[in-house]
Image 1 (tube, one colour):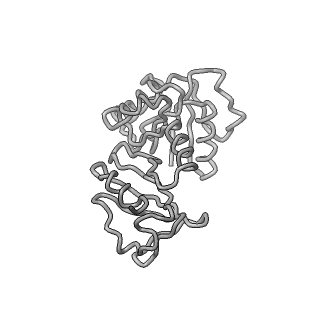
Image 2: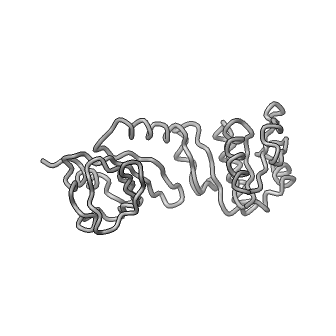
Image 3: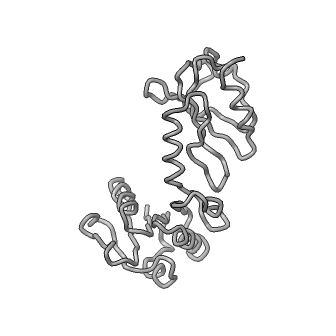
Length: 221
């Protein structure tokens, strides 16, 4: 798979190293000469250019990319790079980094973004997940389908603790995808019993009633 990454800072380089370790072909683009730390990711192809300019993207053969990643610290650059990749070069998959959570609403298909990754939101979710038991936490959102991945640690007095998965009537457009128990992920079957302390990972569609889901999983009474 060929991946082109806009932004050769610490984030872009980390993504590149991870992809290269999985035998993917990676190109890093950055207009800042100081970002050209080629020795840190020598296996990648490096391009000193503006990722928002068509001639630079043409020279980088963006049309041959399977995925483009906007990984700069500038939301405007990540949006423009994604839009050009999708509309001008027909790249099948675009991933964009969101630096300012206030800009998340723009990172959707209208700007050519298939997947938006908000580092501040993910970090916030991880903090909330660490301290909250019995509260739904949004871990990730898919911009294309508008579905969410939700997490909840099941409290001991939950309505569904001790209930078999197949007996739980989940709200419409909600699916239990994984149970994490004692640090091990489990694919739930109808006969599995939900236990206090289970970390539930759920996929909720855009029209899912998360209030109903919260009421289903919170303590009794």
